[in-house]
Image: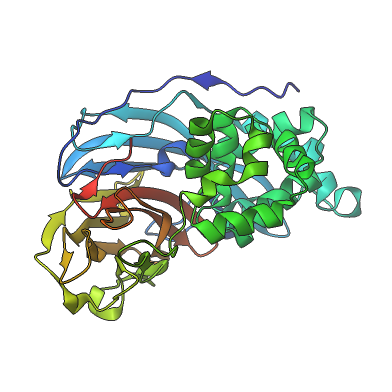
Length: 426
């Protein structure tokens, strides 16, 4: 059986710059097949469980205007001990309108087929996870692994093929993915695979580059965590440096640009109140009064009452709805980004962000589906002078929609600055 991945080109970029209420949505669900696991047995009468052959539609909208609809079809990998491992692969994608307020991250995109998935299970995953020692292909464990790290199966299979061709075993590949997923605070394992996809560097070569600089993956992740840098930001800094990847990692000079707490002439550094917080927990929206917010202030004074003349910035309403073939709404999420910005201190220079949060206006899930969402700071830098800071903060929203052991993941990335509030990511 040939291990081939069909490549297609989708859509274009849709965004016009605005001074206020601009945002970048990295809509992972458009690129990520959905993964489902369930116990064996008949579906209930409401048809909210997914079984082989079912189709699910997801619609992304901006201010109630549908932007894109994706249709997925469910495939059963193999029954194991009365358990089903089902993967939902993309079948169609329709772009309804070109929204000037939304930039869809739609580069040339690769799709996988059910044959690609089965080839990987038969020739790689089964041997790694048990092989001849047990029956079947251990597909249920594979789906659990994808779900645990919210992995894009397209990126996973394509990047594994490239690394494996360079001599990397499936065990080493999986270990590297797990290390990033378990340890990295500013990004996800999926972000790591996307970084490899964008750079064209396979994982084997990247780990060899690290080793050549005397750096392990764990040490490299510690550095990213220390300076609040995601893999996407690391790639941007690498491109800006003009250095080879090895020299760039070896020098680590770019990380100095991202220091948060370095003492600044005429004032302190930047203080981020919270790096991670829940915005939806067990289907319930979390509010700023419950601690669901962060801020970027001067580290010399972290009392928000000493910052004045703040302005309000509100983003567009983003909604994500999932329905089944009976047009039953399985889940529905609506939210807006919100921030106070341009705040000045009574004695210190600069403009700051006293409050950044997300207003969740709807968080609905039909049983047995459930919703959770976490906001985390992925990048922080100072666009201004040391004595006149203009903080830039990038936040990633990681949204999970689950049906018992089943999970759908999508990510949204927002950028805020002290001078402009909500802005777009270039």
